[in-house]
Image 1: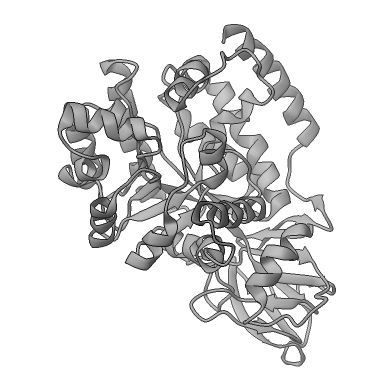
Image 2 (image 1 turned 180 degrees about the vertical axis):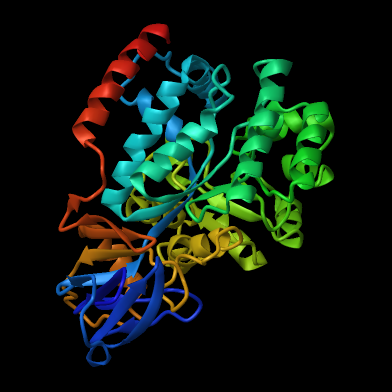
Length: 444
């Protein structure tokens, strides 16, 4: 009997990666949280700790979410916010009122729930961006506890901003620094850290300079909302004499370990700066539509060679829902139903792995020997030819409508046959969240 071995057989394997392969009559052997071998099924003999029969399933890497906000969970169904005419009012009437009221308990439970949902949706890695201005210190450790409890991977950061005063801003710097140091010390494969910044228009030059110095001293990348709305550009040009990306570049925030979320209102020069610095972009189409801020021109970004991934900005943890939304909105924005197919689907299927592998070791997002054993099984009987050339079409118009059956992260089976295998009570967590959110809404 081999130790900690997991064999997945009888499925259709989609490897993804730089050279995507669709493999029939192959099996995957996982050992010690890694993919040990992918080969024809007849090569695997003997006994294994666990065998999963993937007949009727597509076997592929777990999905990755490049921009998420766990803390938004407890706003679900809230009707107390005033109607908002623009994005600035959305922030002022809803999100900035909410985050001021969050407690540390709220932070923990608001992370647990979407993490469990992520397991159900086959999302095994999430890059989160947290805010709780009057419960800053210790918030990232509690969210990390939730990540560990559920068994997924996450990169965490705290959303630094000057909007709540100097003390809160300093707490934000300290929280980022302490969590980055923790991750660097522990080298936990589940947890990574970035230095979080809210957005350029809520950060003074003084704070930006301090944050840049602190992050660079630790060798950390940054995670920052970038030109999400036109108002961000207007504020920066009026108050700093620079456009958003230009200002981030001035302070050395850009670079290969930085994620700029949204980038809806950037011009060609800003795109060139992102390309020159090898900075990644996280596209969030559903959120951008919901907030009526516009559509990021990822078609032009792709042409320039910018690495564009896909986030959900807390609209969902269902990455297949998000990627389909990207496809439709770019057809509409370009007024051309033949534009944007490869770009939209590549954000999720290829580029999120490229972004994440700037941080993670072992590497993720591809079924390959030596890579992390982050694997999902999706119900699917292909009704038409299914191979490397047709896979993305099947993803957009077939697989995306199917159910995730099994979710595995680091070789650990978190869901099998659509039943959670993690050591927690989902109903109990929801009940606790209900109590917390009820009191939160009373404070809102």
